[in-house]
Length: 206
Image (tube, rainbow, N blue to C red; front, top):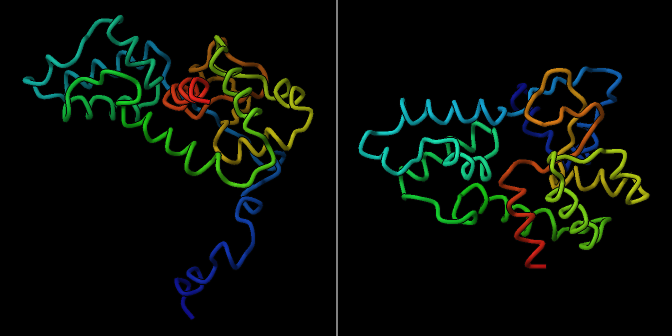
């Protein structure tokens, strides 16, 4: 039997819960947190895209000032992938009038509603809303992992939210600069700015 044939037989259904296989004791590796671009770096990257990628006839669709970029950053954060998608969408379909018109926000909303929040789980809708409110009201954009765990009085609640991509776990880092002030401890965040915008919308809807 070839190696390829062996690999094809090792499906998650054959080897148990893949999430358990992927959990590795942190004593056996060093987590290298790169992070996203800072806002200043993201602004420069955005301007570079306008100068090198966008066709001249499309440049009128984009603002170039820092004030113009504030609204874009509100949707994309410093994630290169999101910024490129924003520029590509505006080039193809014109200005984005509201958050839900941005494809990345729409995708994040689908993820929350159709995949992550409707499966059997160990946390309640009220607990999800609590986390949403805590994150969207946080000036830093993150929450201390230990504080959130203590708030729910059970670590498994937070771990399950991380596992379902409702929260994103960020170990402390010596050089990542996208979170300000730079956290000294482990924190949890949204998976990105599009997810934060969805959290704001769901707080109102629910």
